[in-house]
Image (cartoon, rainbow, N blue to C red; front, side, top):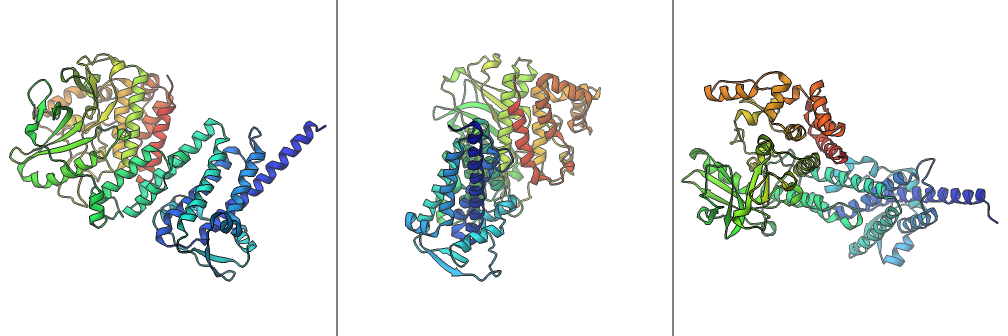
Length: 581
């Protein structure tokens, strides 16, 4: 009869064997990456191979296999079998040829004289983000020598599809391993993979890298999700348009193939837009209406005559970009653009996702909802906060800046005229995007809005005539201002007046009437203030406060600047999602 001690000893032995095979797999992944020299067209295959290695290493961390106390609840005999299958695929040249029919071209390499291949494309991006994924070891070379003289291998002609099958099978084995974990661990793995892919996408600089990442995404296997796929599509369009270029980005040649792959801008005649229930108020910024009897939201943009020709290009690019968004951007899809040179105005026309009759549609900005003192539950406010934080994360992942985040640019659409019921406010939509500037054009340097009220949402470094260039952190600061309004359910002017013991409502009103300069306060001065800390934590909890403080923290405290901003934004979103009511 087998005793409990013998059973424990047997389990420990299986875990020990599993660890040895796991380490062999990791070393084999390193060797395979070093060995496969297939040129730039193989960037996707090499990157997929490294992603599978990353998945395996992250799985080992969750299972605690690489620690002194592996998770005893797991099915280690099955795990050992799965790892053994991976090891065989990775290390057996005979297996590659017999099972997959993969033929390799081999060149022997003398010991110590192997070449270091320079990564290209997305592989280069991943090496910079996760250098450990590309490190080599003595044991990886030993695995190669076990199959004979150390060889530099290259895919033979016609072998690419067979290599894809090999990597697919490795991915399926990793998926089996992940399914053996508990739900919290599987969620952690998914979050980590998402963070890696977001970082990679945010660092891509040309069309080839983005398209490689798009081909890499396989949500069903845990590699990416719909939000990252949407962000990749959006960035591809932005790179082709050549707008709001970041340092190092390259606009691709405008070939017929690229042109045919792009969405088309729809120019809409202004006279075809009808007001919803009243006259078309073109002086307003946002208005509900209809186009071809379908409900739309119209966002008017006015300009001076001498700026019209410059702004026309910007508005066309902006309309194309906004026509490429989905719900992960918390922005209505733009269906077209109107342009009137005689009247010096444009209008972005958005699709409205409501099915009620024209008389029952209504809209409300977050600013107006707060000002009218409508009640809203903390649960609903947390939901709005998460939606806005996710939208900003999406924007910055694709290298786009909003530049005008504030509560009057957050709009709610509702079926029905009565917007008093807070439980039925609907989803928030982010509006008021700044102009999309073609390439490195600097002819349009003015701020998108010059009112004193809007200045309160701007970082102090971005106020006034000598404002510095816009950075992701400035969008994050503005998000922190809106999150503060949501927590306290009061306007930003009211909060700043209370914290500074000065009536900023009156000061702003007087300054706008007299046209005098006014030095405005900023939440940057109060994010650590004891009263501010007490107010926000009491209203929304400590985790919410931490999210707000991350947004408002002075960017000069971050040594990596914009490089670190995406990680900060993920932390903001995670903290908001952790809030419980």
